[in-house]
Amino acid sequence: MLPLECSWSGASIRAESRISDISMGGCYVDCRNVPPPGTDVHLSISLGGARLEVDGLVVHNHPNIGFGVRFNELAPDVRAVFESHLG
Picture 1: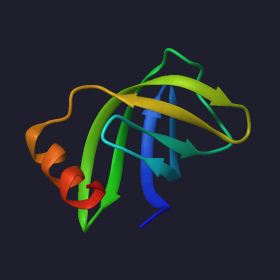
Picture 2: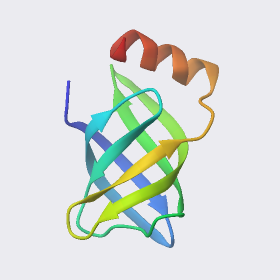
Picture 3: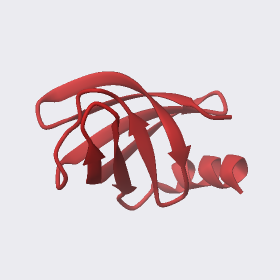
Picture 4: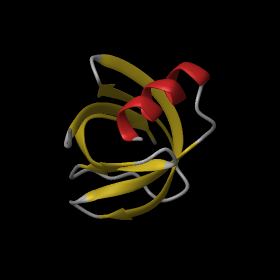
């Protein structure tokens, strides 16, 4: 299942990236241009044939490698897709 394709925007940055780790609570986005911790981000994640729109907060980053996101509250339809694919 991993990596997952995604696009994200936040801190005046918009990029296409990949997600290398994901759970119900957050994910790790692989990319070179990373936003600083505390940045609100919007992710569009491809999972199970669906395109899921998720908002979150950058909780840590690793320059030129990627950043960790804690999801905000998930919409019920997004949560249902996550539960069916992530367990």
